[in-house]
Length: 179
Image (cartoon, rainbow, N blue to C red; front, side, top):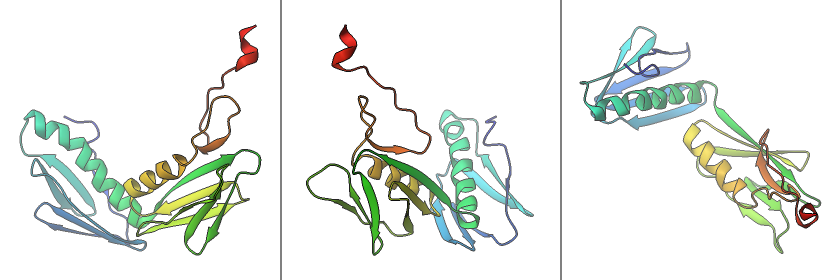
């Protein structure tokens, strides 16, 4: 039995869950999310908890059990608390700012790079160098954060670039390190 899949998902007080066949809809104070799960898993509501079980013991069912439980748990957490990713910009003259709802970054290119947020994602900037990406869908928040980081990933020689908060970048010695 999957250690992750067998754990029940508690439903907070202000969150409502609607089960319609394989479609799970979760509505909370931050918004509403819906996802259709594969037929290998069964989602049942038991009072104020959700339980994800598998139809049988086939390999395909076992593979999807923990994944689907985590997807549903992320939906419940997203509509109740939301998710956020923090990015740090390091480099002389590198900075970010908000223009309307778009994120505009000056990161060493000849022109500033502008990124428009997808539906349900908000950008925030602290001290011109810390970018906060927030939203209710964990998958979209992570993808947008990866896209922003991909504009100028941290390089190993001087450490300049955009990195996740707390990310360690292994540094290289460069030309002087040969001696």
